[in-house]
Image (cartoon, rainbow, N blue to C red):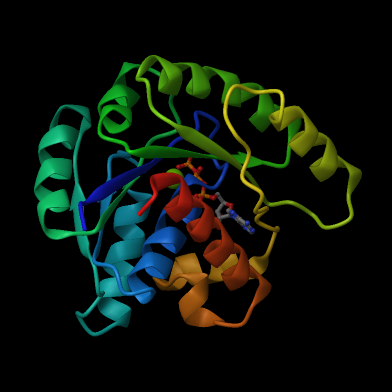
Length: 212
Ligand SMILES: Nc1ncnc2c1ncn2[C@@H]1O[C@H](COP(=O)(O)OP(=O)(O)OP(=O)(O)O)[C@@H](O)[C@H]1O
Ligand SMILES: [Mg+2]
């Protein structure tokens, strides 16, 4: 299989980029693919997750990890793609020229939108940048609270943006935060949980879009 690069981007901080990136990585790896994760965010959250994982798994994290600053993204992606089915790229909360290299490498860009109006407003800028890079994007509602009107309203407004909206909605679930802090994905903590089903469904949509 050719190596696919999935970049997770959103200028709004705290929208769930790192959460989505690491959970997709764990799920794809559990599904039998070889996976690498690449942290391009100077905050280094994905790196912290990976180091925690490295320790928690007794040095057998099951995936490759690397970091790159904007100018090194192309080189790192090329290298990781050669030996992995998927490269998952986490990015800083920005929609400027620093993000461009990670978009340029992407076969698909996932844009998490936390269930708030502020997140929605921030989404247009990143979608514009993705469009300029001529890359396909998929927006996904994150931290949705079941049965609230807000989540429904945000999804409705997401439909008016320039990118398709994932059918899968990620709920606001403590397990996402817990697993992240322990260096795991939700699939590894609670295989039969709603959170794990949501990640599996999102991964399935992504695989269909990539026509893997
Ligand atoms: N679906 C969810 N349910 C519950 N908590 C979540 C969910 N998604 C993210 N979080 C929590 O929200 C916080 C921000 O998430 P995360 O770090 O993934 O966002 P980010 O977009 O990567 O942030 P930054 O822009 O700072 O890089 C974290 O504490 C995370 O555990
Ligand atoms: Mg992050």
